[in-house]
Image 1 (cartoon, rainbow, N blue to C red):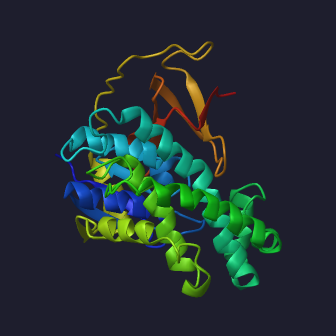
Image 2: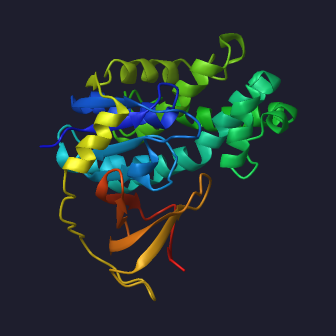
Image 3: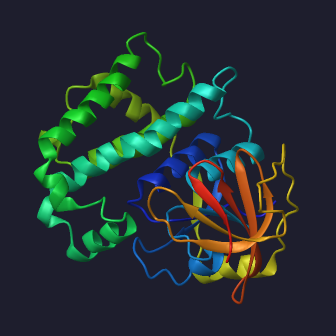
Length: 307
């Protein structure tokens, strides 16, 4: 089996989500540290312009977005599972809520609390990245409301543990535990303890400690150049698409554009290899790495014909 290579940076909450999944599954993996802002010269050859973090590389196959990454890790390492029997639908819906709603709750409170202390270069990058949504000064002006909204959502989670369950869906960790944890981890790391919205939520704090105890698996460092060389020496795996779908006007083999529909909308072009209700797979040819297959989740991404 090819090495599991994670391209990430330490402060990334979505990176922390995947690192904890790797720890839960006890996976040995290679760690490539990437910049948190553009330019990312050793990332773009793999992704074709996609700039969100993290990125999972397995040979010449590249998995983008934590939904796609998590599904591939579950496929390759099914035990212990991220989706205990009977929880698949609940797990997917709760994780999607965390990624789309809770994430912005936490970003608003973190950036609003830090306000003008956010480095100007980083603030400008995130403003551009989010089409102006992630604005530290706007968040600072609206901080009381943002804190109230975040606390309302956190109390949903706090009260979920009132029946004694150790994890969100029961006795064992499941996919939404890692999705939610990523943002509570970001909150605790970035907001001073005296103002932290988690201060009076002991069950949520205890749950975080249980997830922290899972560790990060067994990482070993890998240079970005070596990761690119691994991709260049590999051949993408054959695409097996369960329940393939036909998209009107976009046949398999067509040149297409794939882009996130929320933020970080940098378009990626390639040849469509397959699409289903869950996945989009395209092939790109890059002068640095040769042929690579890019795997996106279907939810949250636009698929368009290339001009």
